Image 1: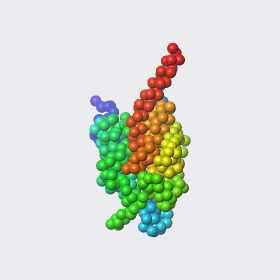
Image 2: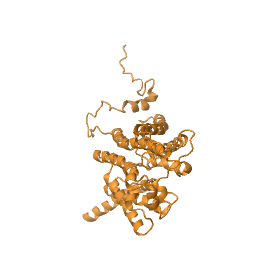
Image 3: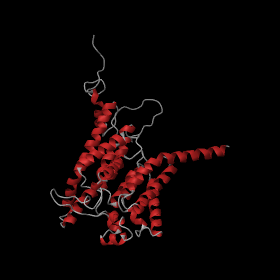
Image 4: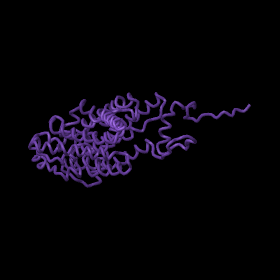
Amino acid sequence: MEDNTVKPGLFEKGGKLGWLHSSWDAFDTFLRVPATVTAKGAHIRDAVDIKRVMIIVVLALVPAALFGMWNVGYQHNLAAGDLPGFWNQFFWGLLKVIPLYLVSYIVGLGIEFASAQIKGEEVNEGYLVSGMIIPLIVPVDVPLWMLAIAVAFAVIFGKEVFGGTGMNFLNPALLCRAFLFFSYPSAMSGSEVWIARRCGADAITGATPLSYLSEGTDAMAALGGANFNFWNMFAGTIPGSVGETSVIAILLGAVILIWTGVASWKIMVSSVAGGLLIGWLGTLCGVTDIPAYYHLVMGGFAFGTVFMATDPVTSAQTETGKWIYGFLVGALCVIVRLFNPGYAEGMMLAILLGNTFAPIIDHCVVSTHISRRVSKVA
């Protein structure tokens, strides 16, 4: 008799290479969706899925990444006293940043694929964004082996142990940066880690605006002496993490995220409001002589507000909770900057603390709403 049994495909479950089904499915659906659709029942039919949302965030990060690559070359040549031209500066920075991306994606996606294969599940798409963000929030000269360890820690203990994308309560990219900061502080602070060096060259110093902020009440004079005026910091032609310096490039990404509805403008606005309020109170009380609006263009405030505080997985979910959560993040960032001279950049800790309290904020908002409705019925 003729066997009419339909044999499974090569990479389908039951096929010869069925054990690679998770990896094959990830590549197969990267740029297209399966042709299968639901035939009956109440289902949402939409072309936008998690993978497409993640791609939009990656596209929104491109302006900051491209500017960061140019700025890496510009800062190096500026410190060395040689400015060869725009494209030379860009390609110099490109060659310094590409290894960071290779380590980020090879290590992170390698763990994601291995985890999916072991569990027999589909590969999560969340690391598309995390892998794009991580090289933008670290110093350009961070040793690659340190970055590899930090990425592995963030993916394993920040995501996979909780169940993967959508189940983590802390932002993996920030967890990677926190691991680097607390495990290898010398590679994440000081004035020698922000400027790329040539192989064999001596360290090139390049202080950031926040390093002057931590020096006390003469910070404004120091900023003026270092030519860190508001417009230089707004444009981004200053030392700092690869993708965090240019507020202009970050705002381009914010427009994309808000226009597509991927990120919450409420979190962005409330974060700015919280930072401005605490900064104004600090100036009013004589804690600092830095104007409140300077905090918006210093360090990672703008980048964190737009790309990491708005993470839909780790931020507040309720509409009222988003206002509270964003305000908490912005306020905590400036509080850390003003009162902790040992750690001038407060955005990382502020967002991680906000991630921790986001479920409690949502719980309180929902409970208050339910109590209000019950009282109306009664």
